[in-house]
Amino acid sequence: MLRILTPYMLVAPLIAFIAVFTYVPIFESVNLSFRHWDFLSSDMPFVGLENYRLLLTSRDFWNALTVTAIFALISVPLRLGLAVVIATYLVRETLPSRLLRGALFLPSVTSAVSIAVVFSWVFSTDYGMVNSVLTWLGFGKVAWLQVPQLALCVLIFVNTWKQLGYDIVIYIAGLQAVPQELYDAAAVDGGKRFHVFRRITIPLVMPTTYFLLVISVIEAFQVFTIVNIITHGGPAGATDMLVNLLYRVGFELFDIGRGSALAVLLFIFLIVLALIKSRIIGRRVHYEA
Image 1 (cartoon, rainbow, N blue to C red):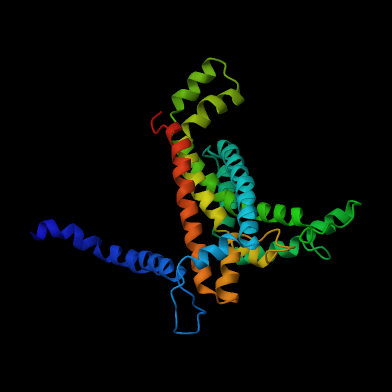
Image 2: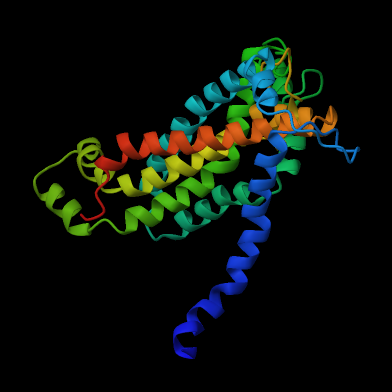
């Protein structure tokens, strides 16, 4: 009996930790989404689906969903496309490649707050480095963070710069698993680099692409720090993401019920999106060369 129970006893602390810090908060969020609570009062009356109705009829919610979707649709393909191309050049085990890997990976382990503060200075209209360079080149200053479309482009650039190194490292690991014999055979047959990349590299790193696609979309829908520091959701709500709206509703307006309802909707949306990706893309993923 002890031999049977030993594996379960060994994983019990981890299961307890996950339950306390993951599943309990999820169930509590679902519970709070059906209640009205101002974070200060002990009274939490049950309001049913009222919080969800208020959200789904709110212009702010649909604006945040639209902005977040646009952010994800642009930033995720941009990240993955750049990562796979750069990884094909850095997969070689040379000293310059290793140095570049480390340099590109560094932003992904750097504090998001630090990165956001630095880039808020870099793209500042009056004293930013980008506008200083444009002025030196003879161009006028650009209000990067005051024009809605440009502000969103700045956030996409910053997020891509921060996360690109992680994607590259994962792609390098996937490329190292591709049999070298396939490339040798393509070279003997006179295959051009673009066709080898298209016909061999891309299909054989599809498992890596699928993994990065899933986590990149989740990360894009949960982006918060760089938005909160660089643009604060502005100008005029042009960069107001779902998590920023959640923070504002829950911790600035102290409407915990509506904030919890938004968290539940975001959770459900990501689950549905993951299932759709699994149906559409998962079938095209082959885990054997």
